[in-house]
Length: 296
Length: 253
Image (cartoon, rainbow over all chains, first blue to last red):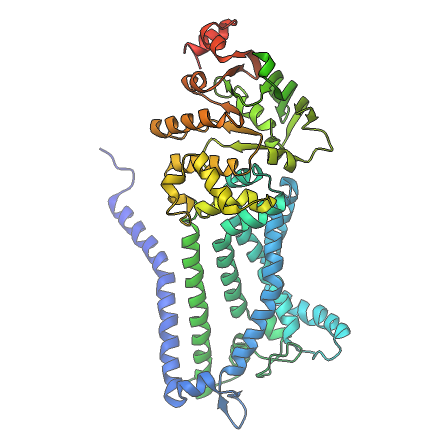
């Protein structure tokens, strides 16, 4: 018998594919390893309690202080604000797309949403700074030039397509025969949507929400451009703040020598960021798994 | 005989098409009150389409168009002033595959009466419907369990109970036993006998024995055309049309 591919070629191809697959795994492990080592170095000098519960973040200016809470507050403000925009609007868009839109409308809207998801985030940041902030300042004159609200709004718009798209998938996964069953009992479209489709797709909706929050936490460019660089323990969205991600950008752009404490703060902050998003993504995955078992 | 038979639903010259393709052609048919009417015919003959037109379920199918007149107690179901939701309140439907909601057994039955604000005690209504559907004894201790934990046959009886809880005047059944085993099928047929005391039933079925056993009137459809309609005994033992005879004796279909 004649084999089409020589065995040695077969084997080496397999090795190449394995290497490709291994790259992403190795990278992940390496990132975690470096984060862990540098964070450990940081924690040798600053106690974990001081880091996590300190209320002043000033690693660059004297008197130096390494309390993470202002950065966490900044990130929280952005996440809450973005969620207020993205979750309700995304959910409503998904309901419209899956339950009310005609096939034609859907075929136009869905690609538009996907384009929205593809816009570079720096464009959103610029948009926040030059359009949303001036608008906010007309309505609320107290608004600072750099402020959390404007950044939160654009981060919300940024993650909205993802929320809409994932929720839409969840609703469309609800079998049509459930809708028919509900209609045959004298339900209106609104009742079918709110009492059958949304509850049946609820775990998909939750998973979408968690992923959206996770993305909002990790979002960098828009908040760096529009929210400012003031580590500020505040819940006032009209003030300038700094998020964890924006801090990392700020220090990375400066000329901080490697091995210094300031340098290590980068990794400590990144570790927190990584752990929070990791937990959220795991949570989203677990919810999704449950969601697959719902119907049968 | 005809003196005690009232026509509750009258189909006159109904044509139904999907995207220009005619699925039901000029069908005229009476549906008698508190009787079981069976619609039989080979796959794709339009029997489900015809059935679904009787409570406006075809409204959800893209490109489905209808002409002719279907009147329910003298009212045109397709009149622009007729509210399809109201139609479905009075004409319920049980589907081919059991489609319980992913909710508890209790909530499945209570759902319709709940959203429509029907009078009376909800618990009583649920119990009554489950008893009528011959499911009560099997589920009375586990009403809060998910409906999806029930077997296929139980799920279908739950769907019947869910429809009964609305106390519709007509129940449309689209091959309700096609996804079930023979034991479950027999239970549902027993159930149909009891239900016809109080309800008008229109059943689409593939199974000719079933049509012969449960119905009083039978309509035979082929390629969207009503070939024969009459008393079930007549249609099965002494059909007037050759095609009907060939179909009911199992020579095709």
